[in-house]
Length: 96
Image (cartoon, rainbow, N blue to C red):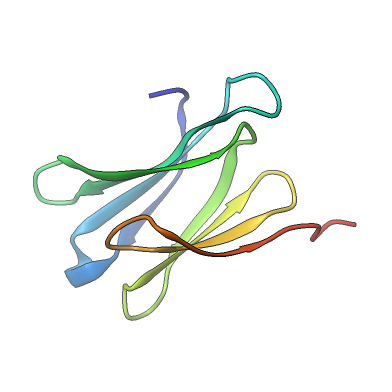
C-alpha cells in the first residue's frame, strides 16, 4: 500500500467487506490507491480505488450495503459501488 489506514468501515454486499481509507504520501496532484476493500472473512483484497494524493477521512456503507461513501480530508466526497469500487458520483468544492 501507499499509506497507513486512516479509517475503516465494515459492511458492503452481504456484510462481507471491510473498506480501508489510506493516508496519502504521494506528491500533490498524483493519484494512488486510497480506498481498499477486503473480504471480511478471508482478508483477501477485493478491489482498490484510485484517489488524488489527499488522505481519506471517512468511509460509510449505505444501509443496503450497495454503496460506499468516501470523504477526503480535503473537500471531496465520492460514492463508489461497494461490490466493484467503480465511482458513481464525485462532489467537490464542499469547503469553499
